[in-house]
Image (cartoon, rainbow, N blue to C red; front, side, top):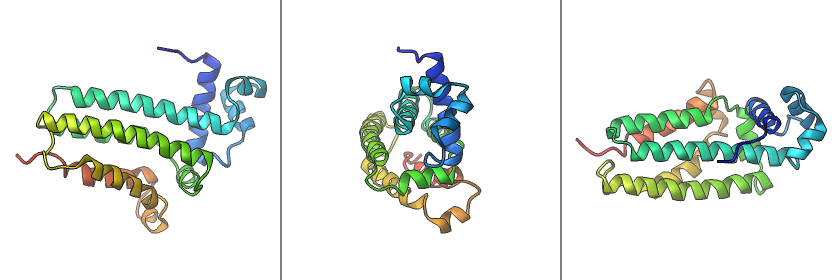
Length: 192
C-alpha cells in the first residue's frame, strides 16, 4: 500500500478539518497551508489546486469507508451487529461535516467537484449493492429487498440535507443524515 508523504498527509488533514468546518469555498489555500504548517510552494507540489485537494480527501475517505464496509459485510457477526456497525461507519464518514460544506457540495450543480462526487458515489453504490446482494445470498438481508432502492434514496438525501426546514430540526447535518440512514437501515433486516 502506498503511503503519503508526511507533508501531503498534513495538508490532507488540514484541508479536511477546514473544509468540513467552513466549506471548501470559503477556505483559502493560504489558510490550509497555515493550518498544516506547510508553504504554498509545497502545497502546489502536492496538489494542483484546492479542488484537487478536496477530491483527494473525498477519495481517501471513500476508500477507507469501503474497506471497512467489506470487513463488516464479510464478518461472522449477527445481522443486527452488522447494521449497527454500518450506521457507525456512516457516522464516522460524516463526522463534523458542516452545513457550509454540504451547501458548497450540493448547491454547485455541474461543478467539477460535484460531477466528481456524483461519479464516485455511483461507483461506490455499485460496490455497496454488490455487498448487499452478497448479504442477501447469506440470509443477512431479506431476499425481496432491493438494494437499488437505497441508492435512489441516498441520491435524494442530497436534496434533504440542503433543505433549511429540515436542517432547523437538527443540531447539525450529521444528525439529519443519521436519522435518515437509521430509518432506512433497520427496515432491511430479515424478519425474525
